[in-house]
Image 1 (spheres, rainbow, N blue to C red):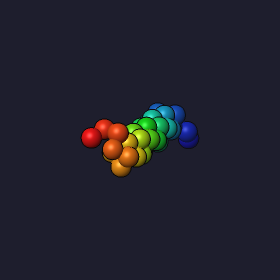
Image 2 (cartoon, rainbow, N blue to C red):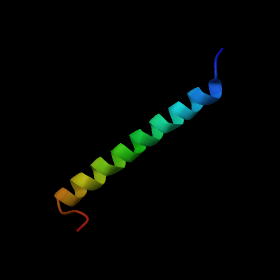
Image 3 (cartoon, rainbow, N blue to C red):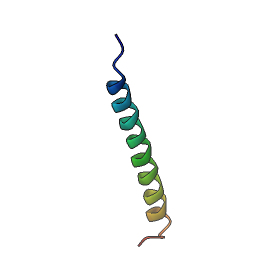
Image 4 (tube, helix red, strand yellow):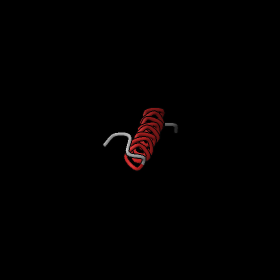
Amino acid sequence: MRRPHLADLFLTFQGGLGIAFFAVVVFGLGDWAGVWS
């Protein structure tokens, strides 16, 4: 039996991880390059 709500929750969680990872990379590289500081 399929559970679409669990699949949607997993996809939302996966998308959130992608956004968080992208933000960490952008701010990490920016800080390393001295852009934000």
